[in-house]
Length: 140
Image (cartoon, rainbow, N blue to C red):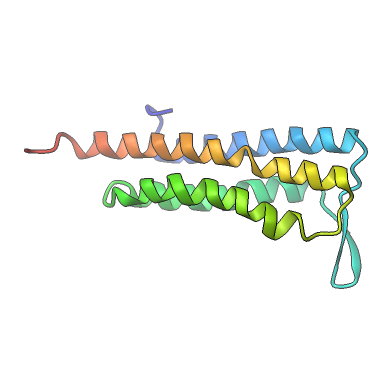
């Protein structure tokens, strides 16, 4: 992934996240998850489009920020390596667990958050390597 452009790294990481999470979602559906929850007194459903959007948008935005900042600020990559996986895991507690989903749906949606952690690490590392190569050798 290190030889790809910054945009390609972001796009590839985002596409991988969407595909992986749609596979996890399909498995949850096949296992009997209803993905129904209550919001504002109405029954709502988490569908495949929602899973894809919640996988793609935050990841693409975060990695785009890293891609833009990495060449000027080395801390951006280090921050992404910590903040990205932490947010992926913490959002399980703030988004998935509080919802009144059935057990299968809860486990499935929680499992959708977990692949984002290694995807962020691989993509942020690739963006960091690319930024270091573009900066050239550091004078001693």
